[in-house]
Image (cartoon, rainbow, N blue to C red; front, side):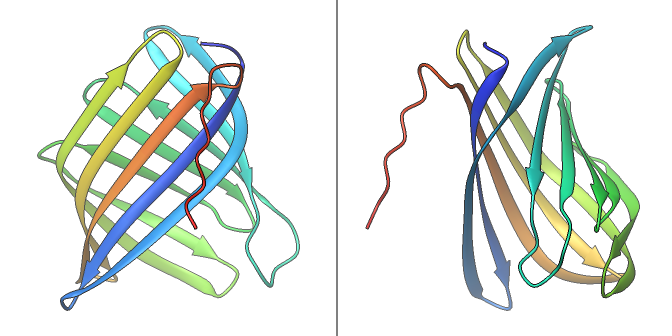
Length: 148
């Protein structure tokens, strides 16, 4: 895979029977080091100045997301594991617990797909069941299809 990549992050959150879809498409950087995939990209939060630098580390068994900037945290998704983290935002700090039920990684020459299913607890209370999907493609071979 090339250094310059197109990243599509989509997610589904189910809370009290309601479903919420979210999708972000951005450019980023990809690296393969010591048997691990690394993806870096920047994110902005609407209504706040500054940005967030994201680093995603991926192995077949684990995905780690580290956010630094106006929001900071380190979230670890490991199948069959529950992991605690501090999540610091401009609006305050909270404790999150991620209970990962499934992680699936499909690595190809010019594409990396990651699918994670997890439960999310905030301040020791279960708030939702979530799925997150990452589709990372070399910029030269990325196919972007917008739906209307």
